Structures are given as structure tokens and as C-alpha cells.
Length: 130
Image 1 (tube, rainbow, N blue to C red):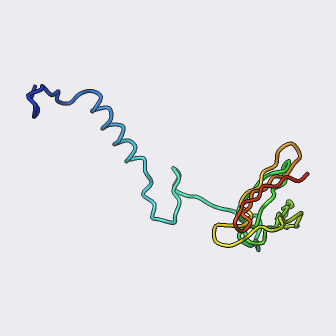
Image 2 (tube, rainbow, N blue to C red):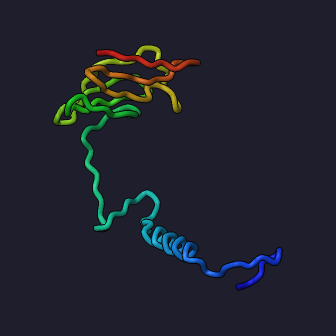
């Protein structure tokens, strides 16, 4: 054993340090080598499918049964998407101050109620509608 600065004995190569080094090596080797903006999977390919288009700053998605509901941050609209991806406005949140990181920020469905979270100027607003 070697002696440290204060004359204390130091262990060299403890099992805990070896296990930590092995874990770190495995984590680093598991990281993706795909360039920024590209995705990587174990098969080496990934795909995305668009289910709708023409939304203005879509921000949050919630499901009522199997039906997707999408919030638009800046317009404060809540849209329902049908099976073909067509959007229909089912409501809007009054006084939501859209822009930047503000506006209609989140929606959730629970027990038949649609909840929303929005910024409204100097304050925030939380609403529930059935």
C-alpha cells in the first residue's frame, strides 16, 4: 500500500472503483454516434409519420378516449383530430397571452373534464370544462 499526503495508507484499485469504471465505459459505449438532428436506433433506421398539418404552434396533446386533442400555444385553440388527421376547433381559452413561451401551454383530460394551463398576461390561468 502507498501512503497519502497525511501519512495515511491508500488502497490501490478497489473493486468499487473498478465497477464504476466499467459502468462508465458501458454507458459511454452505448451512446449514439448519430450526428445532431438525426436519430439512431439499434437497427440503424428511424421514421416519422405526419398525422396532420397546418397547425399554428402546436404545444400539447391529450387524448379523450382514442381521440387526440391538440392545443395551439399562440391562438389558444383546442383542436380535435379525426382519423384522417383533419382538425376541428372544439374550444379556445379566453385571455391566454400567446407568444414566446406563453399562451395555451398544456391540456389534460380526466374524468370527462378537459383541463388547460395558460399564461394570461401578468398571471396564469387554470381552467376546467366538461
